[in-house]
Image (tube, rainbow, N blue to C red; front, top):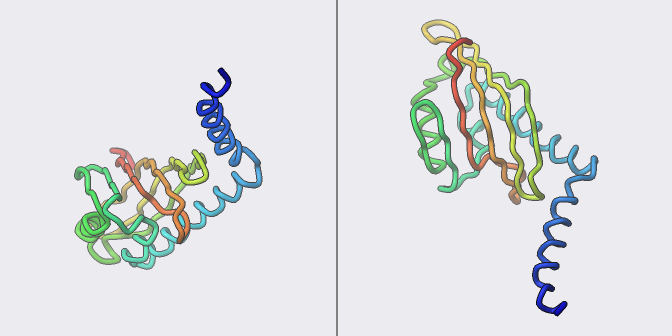
Length: 156
C-alpha cells in the first residue's frame, strides 16, 4: 500500500524542499539583493538614455511579455521597439525612479516584484507615474524580467 502513495509523498517532499529553500532569511535576502541590484542597473541605464542597456534586465527571448497602456508586446525585439517608439531619445526618457518595491521569491527560479515607477521629464513631455508587477526568472546570467505589467496612474 505504501508503494501506491510513494510518488505523491516524493512529490510533496520535493515541493516542500523547494519552498523551504527560500524560507531561510539569508537566501531570501540574497534573492532580494540581486533583484534590487538589477533594477538599480536598469534605472542607471535609463537615466543615461541607454534603452539597450535598460533592456538587458529582460529575458532576451520570445518568451518576454510586456503589458501596458498600449497593449501587449511579446518578445524581446517587440518590447525594445515599443520602448524606442514611446521614449524617443534621452529627453523623452527623462529620469526614472522606482519606489515601494516588494520582492517575493516564489521558488529558486521565480520571484514576483511589485512597485511604483516615477518618470520625471521636461519640455514637451509629461511626467508619469504608475505601478508595475514583474515576474522575474533566474537564468544563467542572473535574474531577468520574464513578464512586465505596467500601468500608468492618471495623477502623477
